[in-house]
Amino acid sequence: MNMKCCSIISVILLLTFFSCVSNPSYLNKTAIDKKNTKIAVLPFRDYNNTQGNNNNSGELVRSIFESRLILKGIKVIEIEKTASNIDYAVLNKHEYPANWIIETGKAIGADYVIFGSIHDYRTYENLTSFLYIFSWMESTSTVGITARMISCQTGEMVWSGSFTRSSYTFNDAANETVRALLRTIKYKTGDVVE
Image (tube, rainbow, N blue to C red; front, top):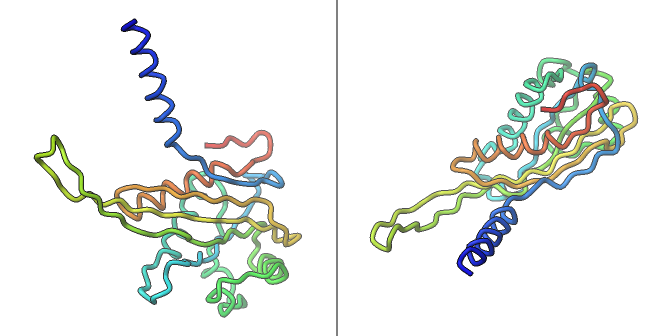
């Protein structure tokens, strides 16, 4: 009887643990050629930045996407260094119509463009206690990102994903979120996905 009870408790604990682990939601319409692809990452729009506190979350996420793509062996085009004929007024609005992506992609030599939004960028403070005697404030930062990749040939979306992750700092949470999103991109056969 005691062994049976321990088995049931073990199963309940495992189910509880695995139910707390979330996965990104994503859509792949086509596989990309990792070796011969050039991707430009545009600024991300922060929907939480409505009071004008300028928290630079859009640039943080863009920078992490660029560095993670480079680590995966994908050629990244830095839009600031490529062409002076980019319409920066469009970049400031964070609205990228398909014809603008096609024209800009051709101008800067990109095959795909990644952009998106930050839908969660918060810090939570919780009171944590140990044995009801010792207690302290614990901070948790959360970053939620929705991203999409558009073909510069057709203007169509080839990949999109959304994910939210919590960690100790904004940088850690953003890094973990971007890493999880990039794992969902489908590559052509022969390309190794890290």
